Picture 1 (tube, rainbow, N blue to C red):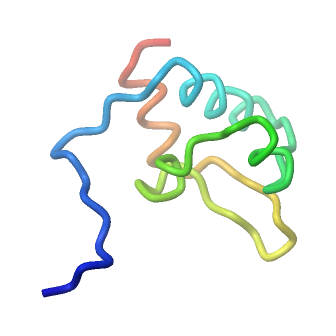
Picture 2: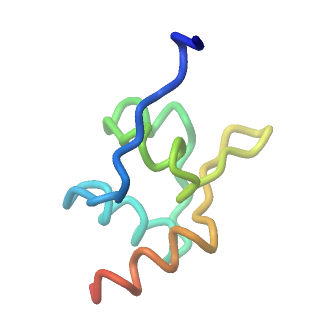
Amino acid sequence: MNMTSTYHAPTFDPTVDELETLKRLEMGDSITVTEAIKDHVSARLLEWGFITKSTAGQLAITATGLHLIRRQGN
């Protein structure tokens, strides 16, 4: 049994802060990993594949993240 796996609920219900982060990235705001840690950006966004991290430490929204924003109707 793998004891290091992360539990994922069957669906992802984003918090207001997570939606705000996705919207910032969609609008082209640059967020570095350092800034994300300071601003307490949820690691769930990365774990669920809604954002990616470049080798330069920049966060970017994925197609899945864009779909989540559109699905929420926000």
